[in-house]
Image 1: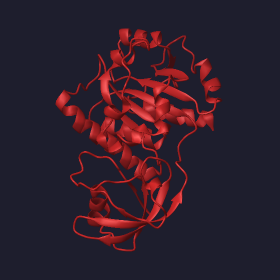
Image 2 (image 1 turned 180 degrees about the vertical axis):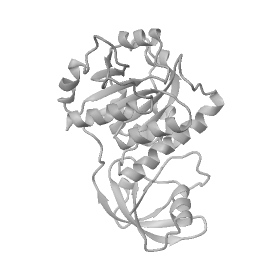
Image 3 (image 1 turned 135 degrees about the vertical axis):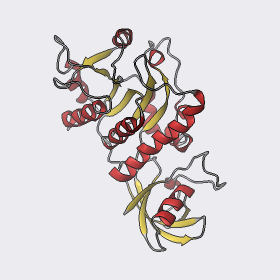
Image 4 (image 1 turned 90 degrees about the vertical axis):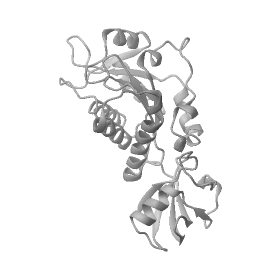
Length: 290
């Protein structure tokens, strides 16, 4: 069955319809679909009354639904059943990812989502290729969040990762005592703003159990930080990963990362591309925790 993200808050949606969390509605209730779902399911895919699909709103689980009515601009479904599963991973992860250009960035976000990342903090850095102007941020943030949501619709993840608005790496790597706290609700696209306040995502506001910087192979560095396996044995461990641009982080940025507790982690003897590194890192974490 087709899967669709049911965004209950989206300032870009021209409709004045107020959408409710699916968990507040009883099985058997009629639900007005969002305009994006109506467009995709009913117009592009030409669904018919009686067709069934799956909705998820990011608050946990998914709902089997059946199309009840379709008009030119609107459609309603009936909630048939709820499945209490999220298909998330046993480890909470946030990636600090220096932005790259075009398809490479889309690939990094898409594959990180499929591998269960919880959040991606977009970063700009000294050697980074992308520095967004203020007028560009909203549009690019919406695009990258939609890339993550589309990956969720495909892979079955019911809690989309949060894509956090870009900040300078120097600001992200400030010591906790001097760093400006991030307001998650205002740092994400409107389509996930309400969802971001769910308790599941609030763990991201706490200090990570372990911070790892994906580094290029270097003599004398351990292949795996000693604390990694110990951390993964904890209940619901939270790990932050720092991944630099194609040109790598500057010496100053590496020193700043080390100063706030990031340990170098080199995976194998090869230099990984910036879009490959998150895939390899997340897959390795999953293999180690299973």
